[in-house]
Length: 297
Length: 172
Ligand SMILES: Cc1cc2nc3c(=O)[nH]c(=O)nc-3n(C[C@H](O)[C@H](O)[C@H](O)COP(=O)(O)OP(=O)(O)OC[C@H]3O[C@@H](n4cnc5c(N)ncnc54)[C@H](O)[C@@H]3O)c2cc1C
Ligand code: FES
Ligand code: FES
Image 1 (cartoon, chains in turn blue, yellow):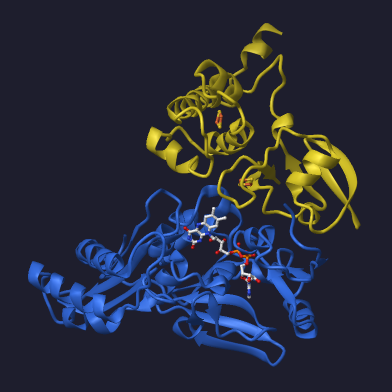
Image 2 (cartoon, each protein chain N blue to C red):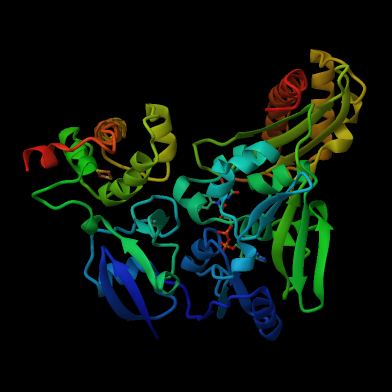
């Protein structure tokens, strides 16, 4: 089977990509191709113009500046999985990337592509929401930056304009006393997660929780911010079983799960709670460990 | 149609392609390299795995135009019938194939896994790294064993220090 016919362009600058997108409504960006091409192979997508961004060198960078990790849109999942700077500055991203599909998929799939595709069960969207990442996009009217929460619009849709390209993501670096974890349930290795949870807990030197951030994937039309449900952890000096179950059940109220072939909405609520009951203590333990060894991982 | 230049298994080739043609189709139908197999065309089975500039990629999800001016290695570029590569020999010795449909993709992925192993491969790691390659026949046990054998062989080769003469140099 073959995709429908299309014209192919491979510009070498963001400006050129944006001008092609601006000139042709039906033009579609091709990044790693690991989500778009399967859809084209089934003819569920039939763009008449593909704009391959793989030769746009300015989108292919990974650097640490002012303690934050800056990722170009073309950074592949595989790079996140193994890059020592990612492991140091945003270790949860390395772990999240390792959960995406299979190695061959990770060799091609990109950060920008994953965010633009906006699959609610995508690991990166979930982890980057828990990290309060910021996304920079460029379109015909210029460049703008937005909190990642404002990128996700709904099931497989974003707030991007037709001529806007995701250019980079800024990920706040980890700090001493922060523990993180990403956990998911998928029936087989490499499958999309039925439900996933990414959590970051900050402990003060005395041991009390000063901040908790968490997001869930696969349990709503977009990754869901669980921050409001978990607020009661702030100020606590230990994570009792009762408190853990209480916040997990509150989290199950803020998600908006749907049923599909793999799980009912109710199963997803249960799964989310199981994942949280495992993830929060794991993040807490890592946070305590980070404090006791002076912030090094 | 457009003309692209590829280095396929070390040989420069140029070929006219329609942008919608997958690399897998061009390899198979234009260049006669039918060792690269296609099954799902969805990125899910790994049968179409080839190396693009040394990295394993799914050739059912890559358009041939994207490989213009780049190097592609297929299973035809790995070993010969008389002189199998270590992973090919190990698959044969371990009975790591039955129908053989998955085997070319397995080999291309395994080469990368073995190449990056650094002596640290465990059966679990092999299963994780080979999870994108499906096999309907073997039940995987023999494939995992073959990858571990190939890795053990290549690490014993790599263990020879650089400045020490190899067997060939000594006897030659
Ligand atoms: C077998 C298989 C298993 C998978 N499993 C998982 C999984 O478990 N978890 C997971 O998260 N993903 C999974 N994926 C998807 C994979 O992560 C994709 O790489 C990712 O979703 C899309 O990234 P891409 O670079 O391949 O984008 P593409 O497929 O090239 O593009 C996807 C969409 O994003 C748009 N786009 C791409 N880049 C940009 C940009 N910079 N700006 C604006 N729009 C852009 C494209 O136009 C297209 O609409 C799987 C894929 C396969 C084939
Ligand atoms: S045919 Fe390419 S992954 Fe199955
Ligand atoms: S040997 Fe038949 S599919 Fe693997």
